[in-house]
Length: 150
Image (tube, rainbow, N blue to C red; front, side, top):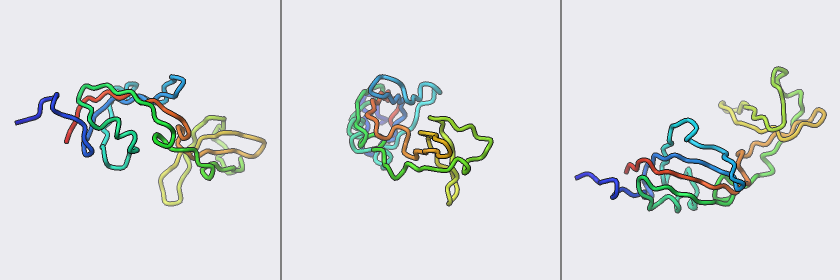
């Protein structure tokens, strides 16, 4: 016998297909799966989300709409001062147009890339922030549960 939609609820080991919108406290949208029309799969209990985030989602049913606010430490983390670096402008390729707020990809020693946000350009010094762009922000999540898989 298969579960009906009404019987499926999010548990601590569920895979959840959901449309997710992340807003700042002022109501501006920081990110949304609705822009691409492609909901995301969330794996509850795999360590990708904070316990506070999961507590709001666990117990939800398919077709539920959830809205909740999380402080920085339960959302994208606090801004860590050690993740802010001051670099000489000569370290950047000449073909990159540096501007405040621009996101630049930096090569990592082990391979791969990490994004950094240009926070300030002053003379020959560039301040680059490697924190998550929403670190330090209280955010509002709007989640529409589309499908729940065990």
